[in-house]
Image (cartoon, rainbow, N blue to C red; front, side, top):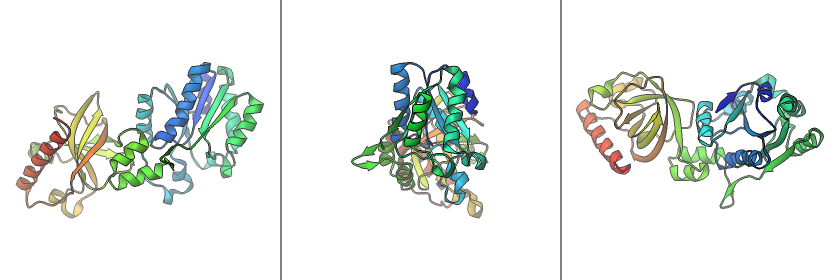
Amino acid sequence: MKVHTRIADLSTITGPLHLAIGVFDGIHLGHQAVIENATESAKNSGGTAVVVTFDPHPIRVLASKKAPRLLASLPHQVRLLSKMGIQHLLVISFDTEFAEKPAESFVNELCESAASSGGIARISVGESWKFGRGRGGDVALLEKIGAEQGFSVSGVPIFEIDGVPVSSTRIREAVTHGEFEIARELLGRAYSVLGTVIEGRKLGRTLNFPTANLAVHSEQLPPVGVYAVRADGAGDSWNGVANLGFRPTVEGAKAKLLLEVHLFGLNHEIYGEDIEVEFVKFLRGEQKFDGLDALKAQIAADAKAAREMLGE
């Protein structure tokens, strides 16, 4: 997938263009409906589908103190969209200057940039999406501009399950409480986080359970505890057992929240790699042990339980 970072890059994509525009944190079923509207339009009438999103999440600029953790960071979104078969992603930098851009100016800039590549054929958004300075843009405005500029507009209905709208807020709440089946139903996939493997104290090696320590990309985490997990990255995939917590047995008062994963069968270094970790099943809460021997015995029991849970 090609990631573009300037609106002007639309001129380099073979058109006509079918744009799916939105803040796609999590890429849940509602987001997927908007994206699929654009991809189906491109497939049926010719042209190229382009997903258009914003980074950072607008709420982190407009109301940073209220900003929740993300369901999917930008690198994670790139990974998820690639799995969906998306070929082009336009990431627009969202800052205070862009937030002041009038809605009409934003749409006209998209049209002008796409003109030389065949123009815009369709813009797909969620039916309640608002954009531009003061949230002055909506589907009605898009339709007005579309009539002038020659593109169609799809205001995709809010995706509901059992009459309840799918939303990032609902998914975030489910993950916060460890309700992974609810999160899976709303996402249309298992909930996962993306993190970069960093060097740790290598204590796991002395216990014969080497772990990959992950710096998670500001994404929503479940409750502290031990989990059976699946992970992929670095050109491979693994089952494993993860500890999300403060490691009280070895860190004491200096503890900081850390996600560390013991990946079954991993036998090479993966420092600096991005790893996607899927939380499959909660095994137990975090606890403090009397010493390293007790900790080692519990890790062995956790690994055994995880292997059985994951069918190994």
